[in-house]
Length: 107
Image (tube, rainbow, N blue to C red; front, side, top):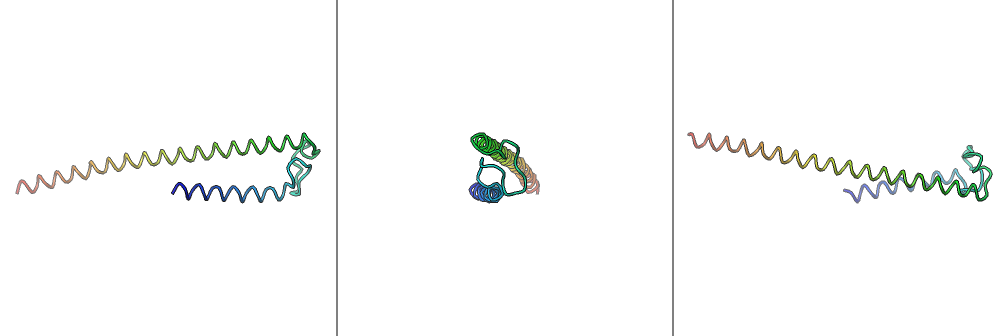
């Protein structure tokens, strides 16, 4: 399940990056093809544009990493919740079985 989720997320982000890079042109080389310039530094191009593009990429990679970590933690919390619920329901089943045994014994 986790492997499937990882594969799906990786595929999704790869597609998004490809789609975005088609509109951006080459990162740091000035204005992109998408109609927006991306800011005055990126429009100017050169080393400042490349640095800005690299910082943006680093920022978004970090955000993606944080989101994936939060998603993993959410799923771990859900698993723990369900395990506790299973234990609670198992105790209920045992309680009911005890009542049935007592009823059979009383016969």
